[in-house]
Image 1 (tube, one colour):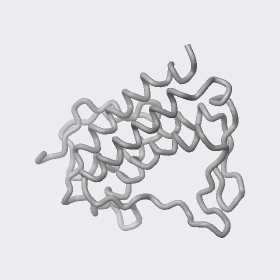
Image 2 (image 1 turned 45 degrees about the vertical axis):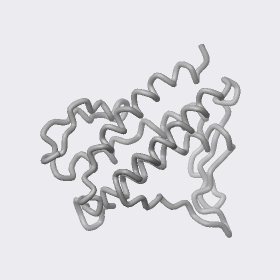
Image 3 (image 1 turned 60 degrees about the horizontal axis):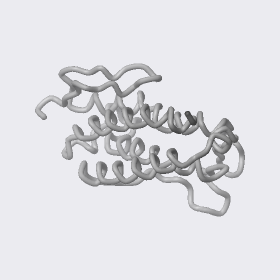
Length: 172
């Protein structure tokens, strides 16, 4: 079994659980933030959705520069509704799954670098970065679940942050 084949079931599970969280975003609360120094819940949802697309970048390119010299810096999308967020998420999940399914073991074991203005921020094997792209959401999920309060949550730990079978926003 290839690494990609072994990773796809976890990817599918994480994406299904992440979608459940995103489905519960109240459109009228996307501008909510828990603190004046925090990003809004809408920004966090957009970031979660966009990070899935980084799987494609990780598999197909040797690096990503967040602020290329003389180029446009990376920006989180600004999707303004739950419908738009879910549509982009579904598109990104399909593209990421296709990229993962097609990558061979040699390529997935090659090093990949995240850059800022040409300077390396981190370098790691592609397989680790791919996993980081979809198993990092504990912080974002923590904010997403806190908007409007939850009646029950099983969102936990960094390794499996989106075990969310019973997440509900109050009033939804």
